[in-house]
Image (cartoon, rainbow, N blue to C red; front, side, top):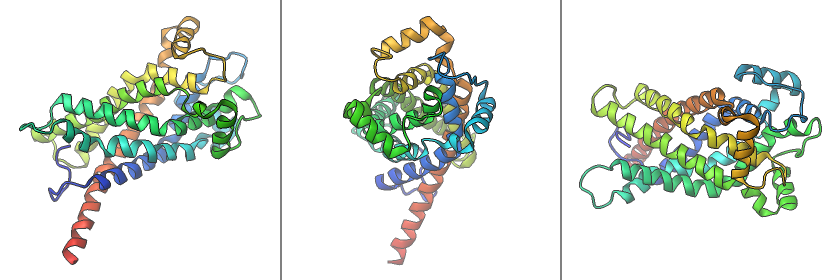
Length: 307
């Protein structure tokens, strides 16, 4: 990415991975209630007899959850969410520049769109396979009371890992890998590549300096583009991952069932909270990521000068 540090000293791969993981965790903590609201809106309607509670809109869903299940329910699944960011975001974002350099090696010009997309595909794919169990547990904990009334399936994060592994096998922890892989390949390519291209264009055309306003605008645009492209796959992924064994025979069956029973608009359920979540998450994450990289490199330079 252009203009990586204030001192023009590029950050190391370790600094990028660490910065991405920390920034993603900060963004997750702040925006997690929006993610929980998104999940509840996405699974609403898949089982008509499971609950009489109806969620309406983002604020309505958050308010209803807080009133009926307590404010802490908005953060149900947060430990798994943070584990996901540490194992997932740190790799897909932190390794992006390094992988992009690999794909553009031997070329005299700067990395082109093809190299950027290839880097996004690669880092996103690798990160999904590593972080999928945390995604399954996070979604189950966020959605469990919707389908199972007052008696939850799991009492906590590690209890969920254990029960899923013992009742569904280890493969149960990787349930929904295909739709999640599709979703995150779309998200990673759109999110990081759009952010990279927007930031590069703003800086090169001298519209904005490579600083906080530039990072804010680039991240917000990237968040909107990502939400539009990933929403249908995200809804299918959530439904399939949260479903009990046997409800859907496959991912395509889940998508077809949604289409025939609820219509095409079902694929965009939870779009507003998805955008609020992705947009705000992108802004917080990328701003923190850029600033943290710079501060770490400044600290490193100070230490090198002192020695």
